[in-house]
Image 1 (cartoon, rainbow, N blue to C red):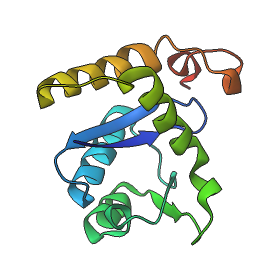
Image 2 (tube, helix red, strand yellow):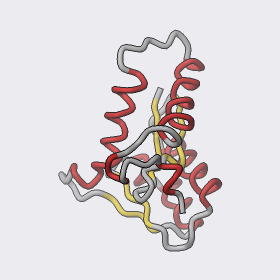
Image 3 (cartoon, rainbow, N blue to C red):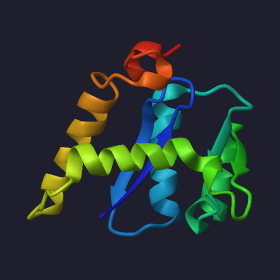
Image 4 (cartoon, rainbow, N blue to C red):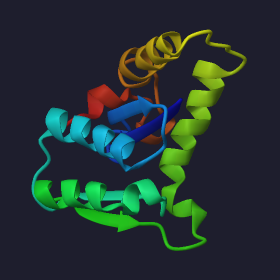
Length: 139
């Protein structure tokens, strides 16, 4: 199973995410659609990603263009450009899936839904945002 997320840099909230069997543009675009549907971003929003093919793909690029979203990608070899997303995934692995064995995909999906939507966004305190929860920082 693969997970793609869209993280709001201001609130640290995961505003879009998608899980699937293939790490591709369709998966990334589904996460972006979720973020657009729930957040209704203004024209000119900047979305930043690494240089993965799922974000460089025409489908993802067209979805951004249709929504008036400006794409930004990490420079080649600049791994720190995407540090917030990498930090989220490290936290997710440590707090949600470390040592877990999910016999079925549905169980993994439920566990990640619970972690992202219930705990991470609404209960987990983040030092970078003044020990608040991401949901409390939504503008």
